[in-house]
Image (cartoon, helix red, strand yellow):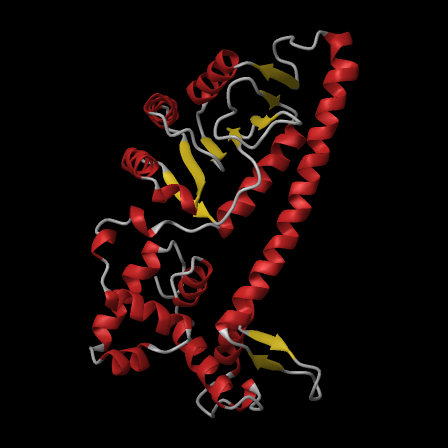
Length: 330
């Protein structure tokens, strides 16, 4: 849904692009300070304004959507690198604790804060127990995917267990995975059952978090996998501080991920007009300008923008443009 400041932000962005040297304060007499501040804050939050050294005091200059997207991706990469680095250090600590200290305290004692689980059967049982015990939420990153019918059926059965107990299920897949018909059909079934699905360009590892009390990660030295492949191992974490770290990593990816257009009802019938609106939206055009270029009514443009915003999982028209650029749709 379009926020109240989007129209003002669009007008301000268009004016600053047209007159690069014009300070935001010179927008016009009809712009009071709160209105200007809200529109400027919207553009700054999206990276469409950047500080300049010129002027006293220093001002801001409008940049292209491409530049804003590049900077967003650079910032995201830095944050992901920091989070993944912290997670890897935690996994190394888990490995040292298991190999050096847990044998003294009966490594596999039930209820231990850290546990190493090896073998396909034990891992399958672990995942089913985690799904069966979920009561508030189940979070997961799925960078890889076993496409066999049995594997997908097993995943669906486990995830339906969590949903049946009232747990909120959120899962992130690589965007490329949904190009496979079996995976797309699988996530559509999950969505129909009540799960929330988003996609990201890439994911560093698989993980699961259940009720903020349990996290499951690939053991050090194993590949990213889809659900801890056979002959590999998983680390079960019950230490609250480490579980919170894993949940924070998931939330970072969730906030940067998009609701795939493929999961929006009727997405297969999206027209060329949707694509044209996306491109003009990403360029920062107003509804009036888009309607004029496409020779349609403003009402039609508003409807198309609302459909696209919902389909991309965005909260505003500007965010929809950024998401579309990030997904290569413009």
